[in-house]
Length: 119
Image (cartoon, rainbow, N blue to C red; front, side, top):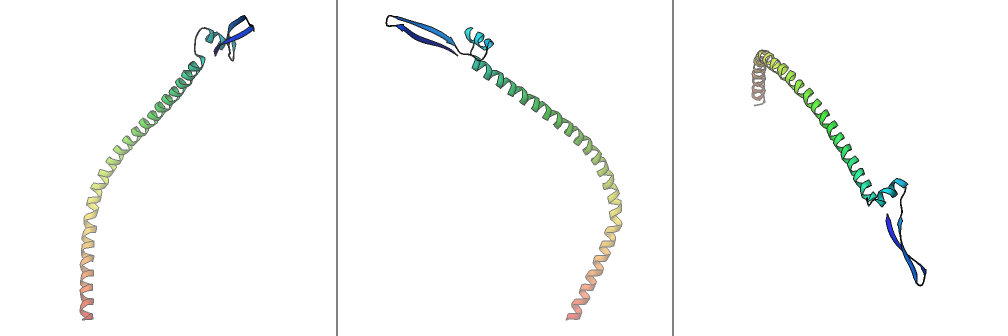
């Protein structure tokens, strides 16, 4: 930074010296021109962070879009297969349902016979 330092050379002689403390000659030139180097470094760091976040968000959005596209195409294929399976399943369920109904009646009849034996 830039500092003003008062120096007393003698009881009647004193001067003020401007001291430029910098890490490099380039930084010293910026400070001499009135630029706040620390604030500039902070702004640059913030800009890098924002750019990284934006790049990460864009990458995440790209992955999400790809996933959504693949899910949508997978759902369409699954819907087509599901409708075909449902139609086929309806035709196949009918004979099985009839067989189950007949089996259920037989079990009920056996249970009733067991009840009569106990009495």
